[in-house]
Structures are given as structure tokens and as C-alpha cells.
Image 1: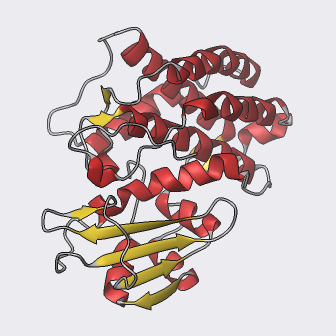
Image 2: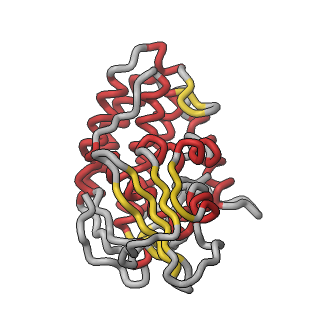
Image 3: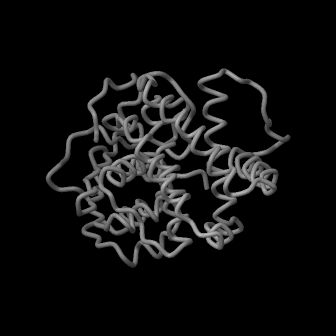
Length: 285
């Protein structure tokens, strides 16, 4: 699913562009099938700390409306930063305000609205110019980001929230490689930013390998100006981190902490460099 789109000048270090546009509609369909299959009691189960399944569904709706308002409709109104507020604090605050305001909305009404608005979001992304400048992606260290990364980031968020709902009701992760391969590829674009304070000789490489149908290989190279995913692979990386897909996505989304991931991964070579890799986080955290 890694379409070789024309890269945005200045962002080559992010690696080859990802084209997630065609996946929004099937992901939306999977979300709706999950929500419409819930029992009444399922809506009250905890999906993430402090939020029920219903709360998380309301949050997804807020993400849908925010994307359409900002990028499709050019709507400028909305909450602003409080004095001295960080990006992370701002996002967490407005998310909680939205969810709190929607506690009066029934699961049935939420589901129907998500169906309606989610289809519009899918169509928006299908028509988006992947090379256009878009919202910054803080965990990748780029602002503005090319739309291909911004849209792939949103895809990973929608997919991750669907897994959180599945887990809340006792289901396993949906391992469909059509989706999971793109999620992992997007999450790994955080590697250069993760390693930004790691000093290494120019040309030093660290490689992350994930096996299975959704797996891949990602190689970060020290360039002197930072780290890059665009350099050709060396035959002898300084460190190799091997992990399964489930560990990889949960680590990046902070479903597990780095120390838990380190207990599951296999490391060859420079352990300090590998440990730095396992600090990766691909969400606003």
C-alpha cells in the first residue's frame, strides 16, 4: 500500500509517501459494522482510561467534524489555546469537552451520525491532493506536513480507536493486513523524530523489522542533520529491533509502555540505540 507518490520537497527524510486514501471507506465500513453489532451493555464498557465505548464513539465523531470543518469547509471558528497551554494539553482539553457535551446523545443517534459524517470524511480523503501542505504531525516532527502523512495519520487514529472498541468488548485486534500494514508504516515515520537527540556517526543505521503479512522493514540513518528514512540500507546496521506487529502498533499508540515492548523484542547489535528506538510514540501523548 506504499504508493510511490511524488514526495514533498524538504520532507524526503520521512521516507516514501504513503497512500491511505482508498482505505478510509473500508475502515469506515468496519467501524460501522462494529458499532451496529454492539449489545446495549457494550456501550458502557471502558475503551480507554476514563472513557467508555460510547465516549470514544463521540470522540471519533468530533474528529470527523473537525476534519470537514477545517479542511473541506474552511471553517475558522472553534476552541483556541489557553494562555501557556501546550499542544498536548490543548488537544486533551478540547477532546474531553466534546465528549462531555455528547453524553446526552444516545448510542443509536451517535451511530447514525457517524455513518452519515464518516462517509463524507472518506470522500474528502479520497479526493485529497497527497502533495498539498496540511496539518503538522507533531510526533513526526513536521509542521506543516504533506497531506499524505496527515491523512495517513488520521487513518491510523480511526483504526486504533476501532481496535480499542474491539478490545473493550473482548475481541482481538483486527489483523487485516490491508489496514495494519499501512498503520505500521505510518507509525514508523516517527523514527527520525524519536531519534532526534541520539548522536551517532554519519551513516549509522538502526533497523526495525516486523514479520508477518502486515510487517515491514524500516531503516533510520544518521545524516549529520538528524535521522532519515530515505537513505539506502546498509548491510550491517548498528542495531536491529525485531518485533511482532501487535507489539509494534501497541507501543506506537502507547497501548503498552517501552519497558514492556523491550521485554518482547529481539535486539541485535547496539542495545542503547535499540532502546532509543523503543521510545517511539506515534500519537499525541
